[in-house]
Structure formats: structure tokens, C-alpha cells
Amino acid sequence: MKETVSVAPAVTAQETVLPERVQEALGELVGAAKEGLLALSVATGLGVLHELLEDEVDEVVGPKGKRNPDRRAVRHGHETGEVTLGGRRVGVERPRARTTDGEREVPLATYAHFADRDPLTRVVLEQMLAGVSTRRFARTREPVGQDVVEAERSTSKSAVSREFVGRTREHLDALMNRSLQDVRLAALMLDGIDLKGRCCVVALGITTDGIKIPLGLWDGSTENKTVAAHLLSDLVHRGLDVEQGVLVVLDGSKALRAAVAEVFGPVPVQRCVRHKERGVLDHLPERDRPAVKMRLRRAWASDDHALALDGLHVLASELERSHPGAAASLREGLEETLTLTRLGIRGRLKKTLQSTNPIESMIEIVRHTSRNVKRWQSGDMCLRWTAAGMLEAEQQFRKIIGYSDLAKLAIAVERDLTAQRAGAPITTIEEAATLATI
Image (cartoon, rainbow, N blue to C red; front, top):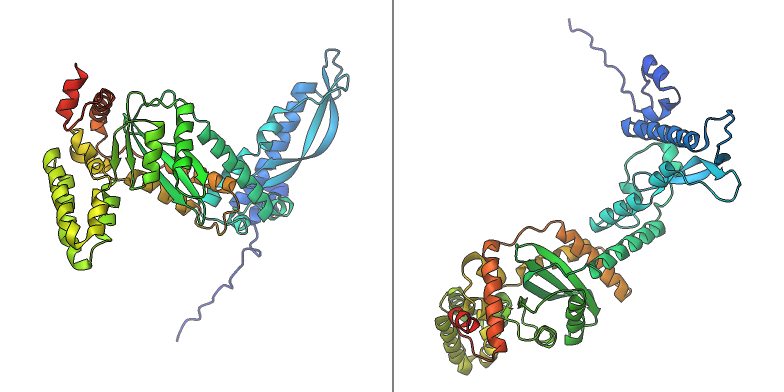
């Protein structure tokens, strides 16, 4: 004979009855407790806030109902106010106080602290950079209780957009007004970001300690010399010292190279070997690319500057007859693909600074944070989003690979600059060191 097994009916969250002891302890908070622990905590916190506000009024005005001849302020009723709570604005009843002569309001520090909008704008910025659209922002908020949700503000699409615009403008101002007087750079990288018809040229600095710093940006229609020159001039205006020399790392852009020469003068420039490699190989048929790529990389990996330079010239000569476009691409700025080799930089640091990978990594983060933008309405919008992405990337930065040799690079660059100003041709770091001692 089988035993009869009884199954208890399922109970929904709304049907759950709190224990009687819990109901007695919570009193008016029973409803919030049914919605979850977080909602209960929020309701409790709002109750505590109300008590804190009343206590501060007592401190400012004095206990209610007691005569005080030295009283400097009096109670002035209550009014509706707002505090920031979990990415929303929530209404509260706040007490008021005025001076005894009735001329001015007495500010309450507790209310000013909790009414600050900064936590709200910070949450909005983090959500937007994480890819949450303005339409879906309200859905990402944590459950804080139905009563709070019904009274919340600043979660609509337009409100979130205003908060984001304000916050990103603050970030843009902070980035573009950052003082560079105490920054000693070993290397500086420039590159452009295409934003669907607009362009921002950005600058990344690498200090002698190996720390990457977003330096600034400039908006334009294209990656042209004028835009880049304005950016570099702004860096100098903010205190960036290039008199001791700095290695500038660029892709193959002639406009950026011309801007560097105009603003910084005869500083050493390293052309990105990866951009150069792609430029050469794009002129070749598939069957010829592996052999040419191997010879290019062998030359750039060599620590012998003369040997590497000769190898690239020989390759360009061989390509001249069969693929003149590839030969022309290789010869353009060829010597500057070997600048680090000429300066005597070896190993991991050479590999890091031979390409624009560090700044391209930052640019990739900028693109990722702005991936939901469908239309760039203005230059201000481009600058704000790009600056926010650059500062977001800064939080993820680590020291560059090979940073222990950056001091050697700084010395080599300074010697090279001294020699160039003296008008002497430089082929090796040993020659630069000799000329610097004359």
C-alpha cells in the first residue's frame, strides 16, 4: 500500500506572511520588508535621515519649547526637498531654520550632504560608459521599494541625458585644464579617432616612471596638421616641457609629423613599424607578402642600426622594379622606423615603443564606451565622450612593458636632441654621447 504524500501549495512573494515578532519590531516598515531587504534598508535609512535632520535643527535652534535668550535661529516649518538615492532623486520633508531677524535661511549640513547631486551624476556616467542607454537607465536601478520608486525623479531619458552631459563636460574640463608642469615625459604618442565623420586627435604621455597619462585632445573634421598643432601647442601652454627632449611615437600620418616638427622642433620621432608594415604589404600580392614581412621584421628586430638601415634600403631597391608602390611606401619615413635602434634602446622597451599599441589601446576603450552613439551631433559631444573614455581608460592603465629602461631612453633622447641642435648627423648613440660632452 503506497503512502499518500501531501504537497504544500506554492506561496508567492506577495502572499508570504512575516512572522508576528518581525511585524511588531518593524511597525510601519512591514510593507518595505515584504519587498526585500534592500527596500527595508532604504526605508529605514530615510527614517534615520529624518531624525538626523530634526536633531541638527535642535542643535542650531535649541530644544523646542525651552526659552533661550541667546538663540540665533528659529524654526521655520518644513518644506519638500530631494536627496540622491541609488541613481535617483527622492523627495523628503526637510525642516527649515532662519535667523532670529528673519533675514536669511540657516543651511543644514546634513541635508546639503545628502542632497548633493554628485553621486547621481557619477552613477549616470558609470552606467552610460558601461553601455546602458538613456532609455534603459531606469531599468538598471536597484529595487528600493515601491513607495520610493513612485516618488523618484531624474530617471527619465532627458534627465539622465542632462546629468551625463554635465558630468562629461566636467571630465573634459578636468582633462583639458590638467597642469603638465610637473610631468616629465619619456615618450609622447599621437593618434586620431574617427567618429563617423568627425575626428579627434588625442595625446598620450608616458612618464619616465612608465606611467601612462592622457594629456589632451582636439576636435576637427580630419586628422590634419592644424588640429594636431593646436593640440601640441595646448600641451606646451599647460606646462609640458619638451626642451630636454621627448620621443614622439606616430603612425604613418604626414600631418601629425609636420605638426610635431612645427611645435616641438627637432625631437626624435619613432614611426610605428606595424603601420609601416601594413602600408608596404598592402601594395603586394598575397604570394609575396610573407617573405617581405619576414625581412621587414628581421630588420626592425636588429640591434645593429647600420645593418638594419642597409637591409631596409636593399629591400626597397629590390621592390622598386616589381612593386614601385611598395618601395615608395617603405622609403617614406624609413629612417624613423629605426629611431629607437639608433638611440640604443633594446629589449622589451624597444618592442613596446616601436608601435602605437599603447595609445591604440586607449582609443579602443574610447570606442567601446561610445559604441551606442548613433549620431555625433557636434564637436562638443565628440570631445565630451572622448574625454570621458580617455579618463575611463586611465583607471585601467598599468606601467608599460620595459619601463625600467625609460631613464636610459630619456638620457638618449636628451643627448640626441643636443647633437641635432648642434647640427651634427647622428648615426649611433655612442656618437650622440660623444657630442654631448664636447
